[in-house]
Image (tube, rainbow, N blue to C red; front, side):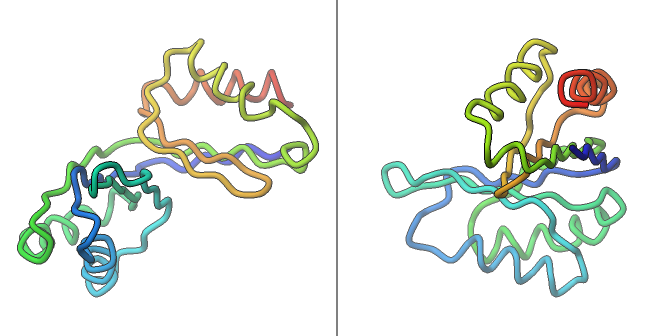
Length: 148
């Protein structure tokens, strides 16, 4: 079991994006062109030809991101919502592949602590959650107690 915490993470979210446009691709290209490294990427399933997506960046990259928000909006017609000063917590374990209900235990802890989840991504052996900085210490402590 490994619990990894990354501080100073910004969530960048786009809502009501037309499905037939290249907004996500264009946005990620614009962000890459100014040297911003994107970490977590999340997308909702399309509903009525629209979807939402988001990604995370380091808070230190906010000046560069803010410098291209106008270009992003002009290209895709959608403005981002930006939420800075968060923490990404990654719970990584082979137990996820073997244990039914592991994810349920993770989200039960987050719910019990009333942690505000801003983004979720998963892999074969990990769950990554972006949460408010104010919730992070209690969440890490509870994860260590439950899974450590």
